[in-house]
Amino acid sequence: MTNKEIKIFKSGVHNLLDEEIIPQDAASDSNNWYTQDGRIKLIPGKLLVGASGVAGKITGETFGYKTNGAKVHWRKKGTVIQYLNAGTWTDTVTGLTSDADYTFTNYSSLAGSFTYAFGIDGIFKFHNANPESHSVMYDEAINFKGSAFIDKGRTILWNRVKDKTGLYGSWIDNQRGVSGDTGVYTSVADEETSSLGGTLAFKAAGATRNCFAVTITITGSGEVYTDDYLGVLTGDAGGTGTINYITGAYTLTNSGVGTADYQWENSNLRGVTDFRNSNPRQASEGFQFPQDEGGDGILKVLIGPDGVYYSMKKQSAYQLSIDADDGNATNKVFRKEMGLQSSRGAISTGAGIIFMNTSNEEKPEMTILQKNLTGDAVIPKVLFGQFTFAKYDYSDCTIETYERYIIVACKKKGSNNNDILLLCDVTNKTVDITSFQGRTFVRDGGELFMGSSISETTFQLFSGFDDDGFVINNYWEGKGETWNTTRLKKYRKIRLKGNISREQSYGVYVDYDDSGYQLVGTVFGSAGYVDYSSPQSIGANFIGEAQIGGDALTDIYPYFMEIKLKKVPKFRKRKIKYVALGLGYADIESQLDQNIELYEEKIPRRFRQKANVNPSTGTTNNPNPIY
Image (tube, rainbow, N blue to C red):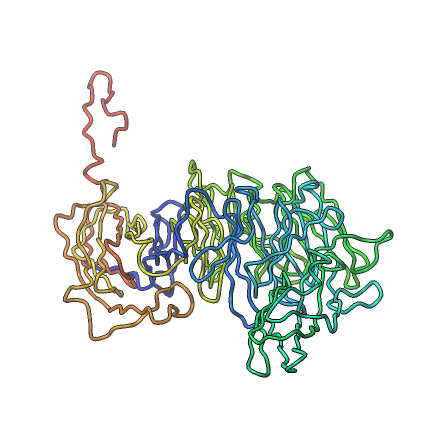
């Protein structure tokens, strides 16, 4: 007799090779279990953010930040852009193209902390201190409709409605006051103000302007109201007030006419939404480069590990390198037979650009563009060779980073919407499969938010123990275990060790020689083999590196139990499956197969067939005889 133990789970899902030759601790298949810190764990659930939406999808999402670090949650759904206002999604831009994807990008300058939305309908500018207001920045003579982000004080734009293969750049925002033709800020002094409130004059002269650094002085009392850059005016005599940086509207609690000193900017004038340039072009002005290889449009532009811009298309990638003085640039094809299917199917990380390479649709590969260890060249490297990414459809793929993971949203073959999330741990080289319907993702600290692929709904992901009120659908299937011998065998017991919450339980199923799974035991969080004297508190969100979740803590307890097996046939191969049955936490840190007995070198009984041999012809009635 002998024992075989899995002392640590570290391999994740291996579904490329035959299930009998994958690592002992690997899953041949799983759903909503993940590998972390030497254990397999039931995936956390999701929590509704705001109200549930109607059928549809989220088509853009981000967090903007105020100057004090407070966050503003933005999203696009259907025909509107919304922000989360005290738990309620509130419309701020309406009348947009339904189902059109938008890109959001943040930009902070001396003028404030802004979020910009770029899309097929134009450019919209939000000051995060006043999310209820916006400026419409699109001007056909000045800028473009498309997808964009802001880097180093300049907007990089692609997917232009009228030029799908062009890459565009705006002016570099120099954040200086007016000085010839180089400044972008204008100062105003001693503008007359009304008692108790009114609107500053800058807005009437330009709809794309916004103000900042506002000071209002009441003439009679001499009270001075100072702007805190968060939309609040504070008087030195006890008065309070507000300022809307986008509209110029202000309120004051103490009466009296006075004067205002402030500055205003117009980012359509030598700013991040001004794409014009002189002839010949001068440094810091806008630019345009054609990237016409293959004739297909640019899907995504990312910043590489070398600081160069990489434009990803369906079958090729371009590289745009701009000189430090902004005087010259190199625009060239970087690689062919490398590309994306979705505009969200790639992301820039500290290690490099990670993307789902679908140039060969029959063999998609997760790939990273990273610096060569022996030089400065950027080269592609395939990740997770043990995983069959070809099982899934990446036509609406989204890739995001979260804690130690690369998250890949994709869909099962034949599905209409994303219904799979792959958790890919680059450091530990593991992939785990979860089944959430995600399309957009945005991080805030240790929290991850997901926009749905099937409804106009946003969730906080990996939070709590339920799937929006329901038990999480799950299973974990191990390898086809033969213990490295083709001989028949039996075994008597399974020992399991891990942590579990009181209310949770999980079933243990065994399949001998592909005869089908049978329940052989259940691990209960309320059983006597659970050690309630040694609780551990975990936060509501426990997938990350650190415990988070505030006061929403749950106690979990160690367990160590044994299942005695009955009516075990002689088998060649065994598979084990775990299924969590309720709401709560569960993990498995070790598995011991005890009292393994080896028998003869035969195939399992259920595969044996007797052959009737005709003595005159020597033929048999068994189409696959065994000699």
